[in-house]
Image 1 (cartoon, rainbow, N blue to C red):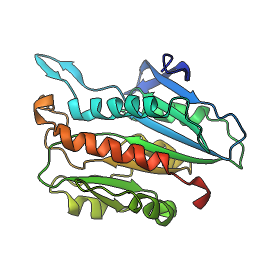
Image 2: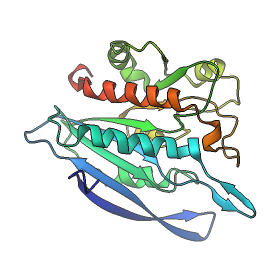
Image 3: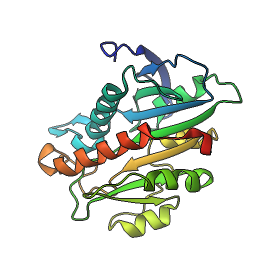
Image 4: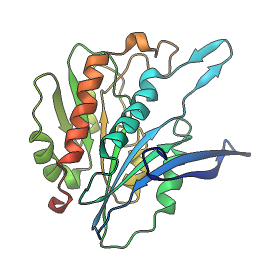
Length: 242
């Protein structure tokens, strides 16, 4: 991020794990400062922590969430120095796996004028191999209409985009576990604070939190299409429609 000339910093924080254990983490925060006053702040998040090594098992986390962090870095490179009508920040969060602590801390430290519109774009589990080439966009209900039109304006011959604000619908579209998608990742910290959000992901992953979450189970072409789609969405994003 520093090499891309973003205003970059580490954001350390502490949190309680269990009843008595205090732990520490640190987010990586990088911001592209606009050259003129703006009324909107777009914040991309992707958690970089994972389960790691436990006993004799290594949980590499290729999909959860190396896919999101790689996308975050790629998108940051695409917009480095680009004139945008909003402030753009990239946040690689820590301690997502055990309670969204990094995102919670980042949101708690936001100091914004009431006139600033905030949108969180959360990238988590973007690369699972699935028979249906579908990217899911899980959106706060209040902003669904405005964002759905902008998402629909991006054409793709190789990937379908399903937009929903309902966990029940999301679960019906996937053949996996019943998941509360609003609470499932870092976008929930923004949702609780009343900010707009859109979570991009591939839905249920049978390799989630298993040692099989490896590169061999990644559909790399589908992943590239998904990241390119998200990049195009940001490039044409009109925050005045909220």
